Length: 123
Image (tube, rainbow, N blue to C red; front, side):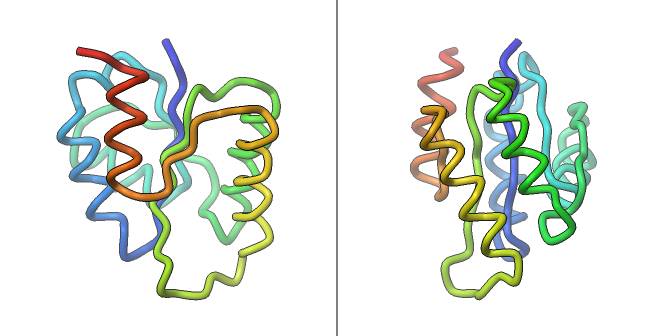
């Protein structure tokens, strides 16, 4: 089962929940990991098991980056809020860099997330 990492900035968490609900049957065949609050909200809304790591500002983005570097993650869905400055921006940039370095699919908006999940998890 592939591991999919889920991260969403605060204003994008409802969008992440809706995305996972839409693809619930396919994502049920995956191991899901997520930053703390995102993972809790997804698990509560969908009933899917989600391994919750630390919150993004507390190191969750870095934890996911480490798993990407260890080749444990098949794809990352990171719904970014481009209109808000994030105090943990270096961790965010580090995660993006690691995904590029290890050629791991990375979706930072809903349209790309739909494409990545559709390609990775065909019906």
